[in-house]
Length: 136
Image 1 (cartoon, rainbow, N blue to C red):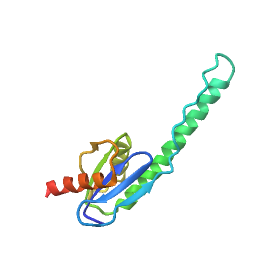
Image 2: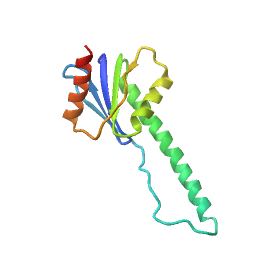
Image 3: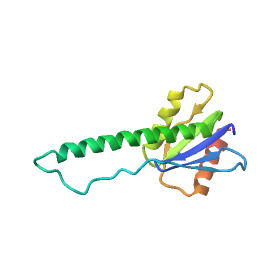
Image 4: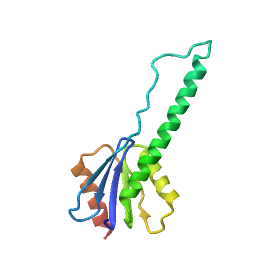
């Protein structure tokens, strides 16, 4: 594994880009199911509201476990990288950092996380390689 790696991540996928050289860019797809909002309203009576809340909590818990598995897969792919630069559009980048910190690998330096919109693969690669080039 490379010494430095950049990760663009959202809840649907991750793009892993080596910080230097022409090593292959890798893609990981997540199995996290999308968050579905019910189209119906709340009923004023009966147990439909309670059942709906219970189903929603179960779905949230299931998504939480799916995200955990996805982040663990990313961490496994990153392997023994010495430096990690994480970017992405939503909360997934912060969740990934939390998972990485839980693993307590003292040899990995996580750089400040950067918020950015959806980018094409060449744009992500340029951003990551530019970040690590400026650090040298």
